[in-house]
Image (tube, rainbow, N blue to C red; front, side, top):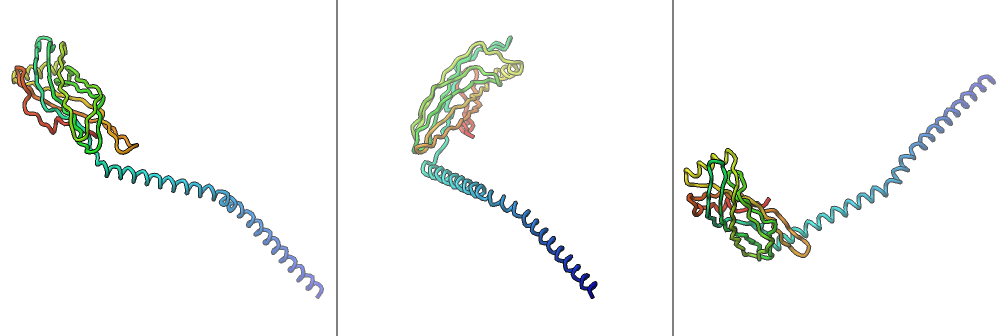
Length: 235
């Protein structure tokens, strides 16, 4: 009996030891689990700050977008533009022997138009090149000027050039033009347009012109102008 009793106590003590070890083991695991929770608790304020900042940023973007849209509805802006309304080839003296244009004189009327009903517009960096077959013969320039709302300004350009030399392809094109008595010349250029909408919003765009013209030869007036093609475009 004593042996059995002793053996029973031995098993009880062994189970208690195992239970204690298991409890200690679980306690250790519980201790290890607390560390990620502590990290999450420490990072929670940072997460909330990020959420608040993103929310404020989104609200700001919405407010700015709504303000811009409201200004657009009030002013209903239109792009100012320029259009070639008339042109003349006043002089053309070409030397086929060396491909040199000894003298060329061109006159062109360019209309700067502002169709906005509420704001004035300005044109700056106004540059137009007079070209034949890719070769620039002369350049037309204008200082910065303003165009009142729903109005236009006509720029009567007149320019002359001497000594421009054509390449081989240009020489062949000029010889063909003189034979056919039709000289193709292109007005190509751009201008910077600016206008204001409201108190703070300023708008600026480049408007670009590419106008192919056909002149009768001997020098004279331009043939029919396609005013849609010879109107500048903004992106």
